[in-house]
Image 1 (cartoon, rainbow, N blue to C red):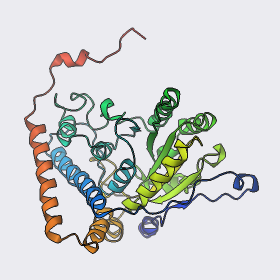
Image 2: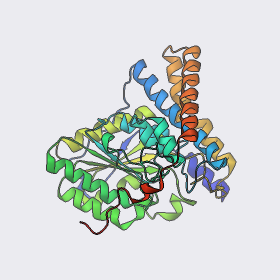
Image 3: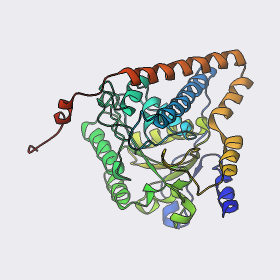
Length: 360
């Protein structure tokens, strides 16, 4: 079994590719162009590297704080999947486009430029947190940034994201909704209701499946009859693209093509990002359903941060520059942790704010 899982984990997605369709009628439909890997400048690559490194170090620190008892409840880390949020959201417009995701949400907030201090303070349940300490790890929001959660119910955010896309179309504001969900949530019924509505009304929504290979502790190959998840929208006439989610420039290239598709009024598009999480499903998960060798093999061969670092070095960025950036990021994360530890807890009266009772 361990050998079988190891083989599955190593079968990483190659270059972004279009969903293939077998039926003649379907193949006559217009489809997105083949995405090309984003041609980034050195400055752009350095910024993408910086964002991924910030997420990695932030999540490592969050794991430490959880171990110290500073973070309560569930805590789902994004370590290994950084290229997905960074690559996709680097193509979005903060405040104009909207983003919604599930409970593994810290990285998405950081990728949208939200202050690490208020995110870490939210994790520790402090009044200075971005949701005033009431959202915690799984339910963080920032309306100012167009970030709508952070949702603990598996798949529930897909219907909400479709609603956000309807708002963009109704207001004719030129916005797009980036709606994330996982390979496990891809089997939820409300996902397909959302697909149907989004295509019927040609809503500007990019559906993103973050396929990290395991739905909690169950391999996607064991849980999904169709494990090529980019094909899941075909019966609703939604085109799909499978993307190497461990290559931030491939992800950015796919994001550009997806944005162009939905903004041209052609309706939704589905991206399957083949990625991998290095830690357990949550901090309470010992991850005994896979071997350490499997995880290490992915780290050695596919780590998104290490690969981009190699590209930066090949492009002439010096080791001293990268070390200075690492030092800067570690300082930012430590300052966020110190802020989160020292900030006061919410007043008891906060229990009664932002609660809708008896009025609709």
